[in-house]
View 1 (cartoon, one colour):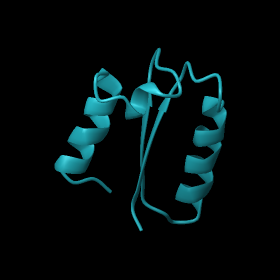
View 2 (cartoon, rainbow, N blue to C red):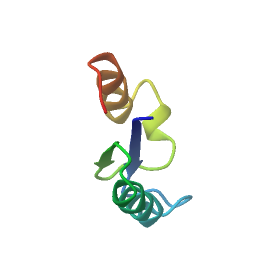
View 3 (cartoon, rainbow, N blue to C red):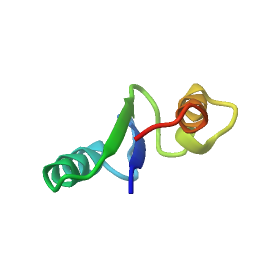
Length: 66
């Protein structure tokens, strides 16, 4: 199953290294992963419709990814 991961590099709840490590392991296992790391964004910005980070998620979903 293709995966989309969006992680802000300023996330203090879940360190960005968790996503980086997951993406590396998933890709090594042959998984399709689209990883978008957003500079200066915290944990909740990627799900806030008022933030640019959410627009990246929305646009990726709307235009097909994976």
